[in-house]
Length: 187
Image 1 (spheres, rainbow, N blue to C red):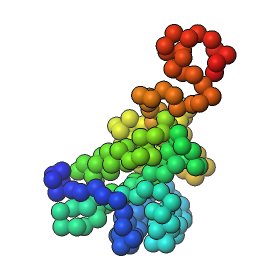
Image 2: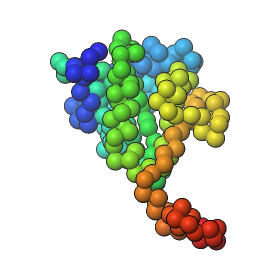
Image 3: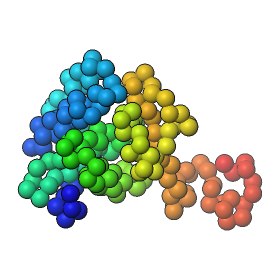
């Protein structure tokens, strides 16, 4: 897909059913290689239009749409458990018939331009086994060096950002150390 034919924009309530269909197709047609039918059914039951609307209200959800307005992918970013310095990527899915055409990368680019990403030092993504290589290409790595699935069958990945404004921790004086201070007691 040519970039000019793709628009990544914020989710609208009218997108909920299309997003549900994309998530369900991704689960059934792509993630089913790595997960049991029972796990796929469980995830599909979870992702209802109502759940998607709830997630969009509590977070920043985006969709990728083609030039004719067809929704081709979705992704969400939210504060990680309410944190101002950590965020989490959720429900990043692309329609299976449009994989490997740059839509997932365009969604990640939009999520990484979002205020929740820009203010965060650490961004986590609970990646499906199927998506690990994609996230590695996007600069994410196994959290704490771990690459084994957790009890939910997900691989916790993260990206650590170095912020230009080093005064992100009022209790710490990182700037003091950088500017010549050497007293570790100031941490």
